[in-house]
Amino acid sequence: MSTRDSWVSNVGFVLASIGSAAGLGNIWRFPWLTAGNGGSAFLFVYSLIVVGVGVPGLLAEFVLGRRGRQTPIGTFRSLIASRWGSALGTFNVITALVILSFYSVVGGWILRYMLASPTGAYFGQPQQFFGTISYGLQAVVFHLLFLGVVAAIVFFGVSRGIERASKVMLPAVVLFLSGLAVWTATQPNTAAGYAFYLSFDADYLVANFSSVLGPAAGQALFTLSLGTGAMLTYASYLDEDVSLPRNTLVIAFSNMFIGVLAGLVVIPLLFSQGIDPGHGGPGALFVSLAPAFASLPGGTVVATAFFATVLMAAVTSGINLLETLVATLIDCFDVPRRRATLLVSLLLAVTGSGLALVGPIFEFVSGTLADLLLTVGLFAFVAIVGWLLRAAALAEFRAGTDRFAVLAEPWLLTVSWVLPVVVLFMLTNTLVSLAGVSLGAAGRAVVAVVATVGCRLAVAARTDG
Ligand code: TRP
Image (cartoon, rainbow, N blue to C red):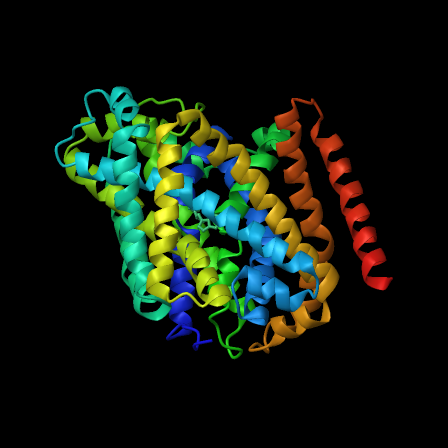
């Protein structure tokens, strides 16, 4: 097998990983979820979950990736000597394919909005505009364009494509968002938005804690790109001499910062238009921001900058997912990178176009199916790290770090017991709503704990016997 591509520097890896994390999830989903779930209360719960669950989970994927030095299939084949390894890796690859298929369709919408912004084409009738472009032939065309941009970067490889693109695009995203946040602060009628977003409302939190928990946990895992082996793949290109815990903290906090920054743009703008942030749906953000852009001075310029920012953020996430698929063909079947990129992109062109044509399927895939696949994938990762690898995982955690070495044991404890329960709680949420069963938060928590203990015992029985 030819030598594997790798990062030129640790900074490149960190920027690419922040780029993966900060995407549509931060700019499109996070402000919306925050606005719909009590503003500051959501922000608070979300931050706790990122620190308590997201950070250890991300570290688990990084540990797996650097230990295995392969994409998911190869990594699990070598780390767990059983045919379950290939099966799990294949499951991860399918998940990445599913996520990128719908992600690319939304990327296409963003591209369409960016191109329509200089003329303000959607300012007059935002709802109708979204209706025309969201599903159908236009959606297919712009999905293909977005995919083409992502593929063009992955085509050039890890160091010459992904690392270079991330080094340009991620700083640009932060710069643009900061500028937009400043512009927003100068607009009229935004005070209520800031108050809602930033002042802490303990009463709301107490009254709504259990209903905020599910969306906050889902967002924390989606935004950190967990569950597909995409972060695992990026870490597989890392050397032993860099500190995984430090990298993880830098990545998670930068990502959180970008989300908060996006909220500082979107939430005050929504409030300035008197828009009730309680209603969601995939088109919500596009449709509600249009009147803000239309009514404010320099709206066309700001709208163009906004969608250009979202587009760059989406591209740096898309390349992570595509790399996972392309690198799998390279690692497992020795397909040359360029041919692999072409093959995978052709497949995605078809799957994404299907979603772009059929709205109800798009909504199912981007909602319930994505939730299911990501939580199952993440559960498998934490079970492998926390229940099977253990000593090897601790060694990998400690490699390249002195300062954080003392955290290795507490981290493993969290991965072995806290994460499985949280992830199974989320899985239960999804399954319960899918089955239409009514089960309170406490009931779901009990299911999660019982299922975790059951799985733990089953794994122990197999490995001992
Ligand atoms: N984290 C990205 C976002 O918030 C999306 C993303 C990139 C992703 N890679 C992923 C989600 C892998 C799940 C798995 O937009």
